[in-house]
Image (cartoon, rainbow, N blue to C red):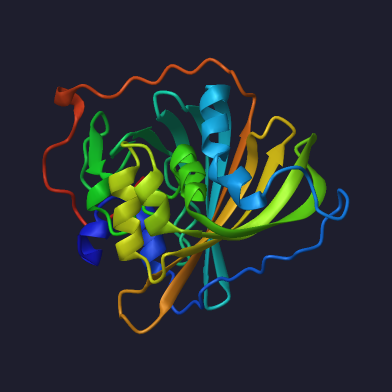
Length: 283
């Protein structure tokens, strides 16, 4: 999919497209530990490669997301909040877009439904009727919907860790009142795609080809049950001019594991089939 089609997926994608001229984010893999000379039990790479499986055992959770982009000294943050069912790989997020740099007031929140291979958006704007959903096939997006929707699918973010190439234990800390172990490392999108679930494999493979680099630096925080509580990943893709890269930092917080989750996907007649207008406010 070309960049123009990428922007058609919504105002969130337009916000991403505006962020140009950034250098690629990078992170080190420090070797210091705070739990003895060798850190917690288990090789960090192996622990992180299997962290998505721990979420399957946890079944469900609430999720809070943020996606940060910066250019020309201006930082833009898109925020989301909702629930996720890891077993069914279904989630529902309410995504709030920031005020435009030009001063346009805040847009109406966009409801997003996350499903294997698909993203559904309501309140999409840009000529879409208010009672209709827009469906996007994530495998057709050059970023695999790790960035386009303004929020990274929580399970796709976790499965990206299946491609961990190097990682180090940083130490113990606290996230939202929970004691956690902090790891820092780099994952490879192509490797993650090879070992991901069938629902996420095509999207991650598309991202591996579409991003400026398949390397994804990350910081992840696991609780004592091995569940991901916080995951921050840095993505880098080529901007529209082809002369620079855009850096995007995506953060996912998971909490209230086991919370009831009931996500129903739209019926066919509720999905908009018309042409989506470009560059119109999503409000």
